[in-house]
Image (cartoon, rainbow, N blue to C red; front, side, top):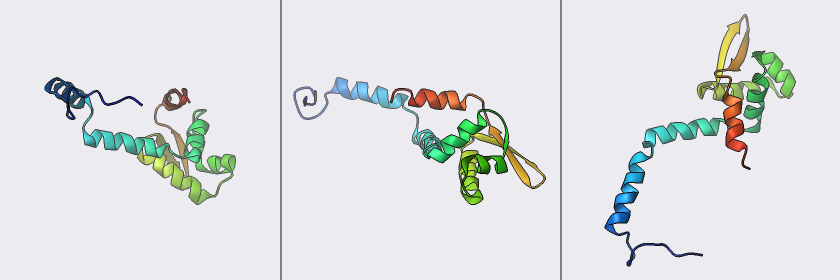
Amino acid sequence: MTSCEVGGGEKPDKDQIKRLKKIISEIPDDATLNADADLIKALADPTRIKILHLLKYGELCVCEIIGALEKPQPTISHHLNILKKAGFLKWRKEGVWIHYSLSTPNIIDNLNELTKNR
């Protein structure tokens, strides 16, 4: 294990503090980071990721999603609601059924980019 490279004492020197303050100033504010974390949390479930992958191929009725994933309607509706609130899905109502699609087609590409180095 290497030691902390704090100059001479136990506290950062003025140059280190200046460099760290510059780095901190370039980090997004807390509200932005919280919003980003909420988006990532919306993806933190295998069922929701499966839904996104299904919708990569086009719009689906909720009944088709239920059938494809073989999960109860309340479970699928819960996951669709989380994805919708996060902005990952578009939806339209046709009669009693709701049809879902990806809000932007590159969502799956972005997800794959995030997970490619595992």
